[in-house]
Amino acid sequence: MRNERQASTIYYGWIVVSIVFLTLLVSAAISTVPSVLMIPLEQEFGWARSDVSGAASIRILLYGLMGPFSAALMARYGIRKIMVISLALLVVSMAVTPFITKVWQLTLVWGVIVGLGTGSLANVLGVTVANRWFVKYKGLVIGMLTASAATGQLLFLPLLAKITEEIGWRYAVCAVGGVLIVLIPVIAIWMRNHPYDVSSAPLGETDVVKPAPFTGNLFLTPILALRSASRNGTFWLLAGTFFFCGFSTNGLIGTHLIPACGDFQIPLVMAAGLLSLMGVFDLIGTTMSGWLSDRFDSRWLLFWYYGLRGLSLIYLPFALDMGYTQLLVFSVFYGLDWIATVPPTAKITSDTFGREKAGMIFGWIVVAHQVGASTAAYGAGIVRDWLGSYTVPFIAAGLVCLYASVMAIRIRKQGKAVQAAV
Image (cartoon, rainbow, N blue to C red; front, side, top):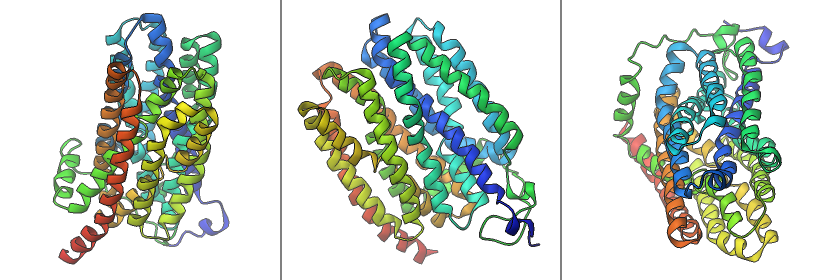
């Protein structure tokens, strides 16, 4: 059945994309809070950097582990309901954060609870929405939704740093909670789970098809999807490169760039501005990456993204030592590549495993990403306490990115072998 209204009105999928973009934007803002709070918490409570890094590491790990199960929950209960529940959980977390006085409390709230809440709003959400609502422009949509994380840094990080510096970190956390409270009714009223809910077809198709009901076990179905994908060499290459992606982005730079700048007496707000600048250029780079992944071989895109990121990270310790101008150069160059790897990785996943399974399998690939990020978040804090600087973690991250670029080339060979076997 052809949907006549689709030709004469705005496709509702774009409204859904806007709501998800806004949700992921706010979720990204929450993810940046630990980097802003690291030094204030050290100063107020005398905690070691590895203590705060440990909580951030747990949050990052749970953020990834929730992905496959979040995809199953969305399939069973609907995207809208899971989004509302997740945001409500985050509101509770923001409300209790100002009363934290112990490391174990920080770990429970910002490690476990925030990790579960943001994990349900992970990249899996964007991939699920793109796969359900779009055939045409799918890569572009994934790029836009992925770029929302950068936009969250752009809008919130300098503001949170300013609030923290002028009136205290507790007010910064409360400001994030207020934004979450405003966002919940927007989702409850306008979010839709599937094109069928508005009598529409995915953009690029003409048939309005009712989604198949989820009949599997919420716990076992993602596990079975992992077992099936693990037989495919492409899965392991994607998971391996994404491990290094997480190691070199939100785990390392997202968590430790601000405190690393503090080691060189760069003010908090100025350091937050550097991450914000990365957000500006990543918004451009990741959206463009989605556009490119619709047109070019995603494997070679990954080769260039990881290679250039590796070079920029090797340059970072020298930029920190030379001054603010060199850090600006790093921020622009690195920012263009911050999470540009997500659209081609998601596209390869969808092309290899099919639209129906792509959400859960990409969720497991994101688990590898977050394991890498968790390793870097905690490990870099420990190395900084041992050696007094971040030089070794930054250069190590650059080297593993260069190795990931070589892995990306092998995805091409493995993908051909898999297709031939099928």
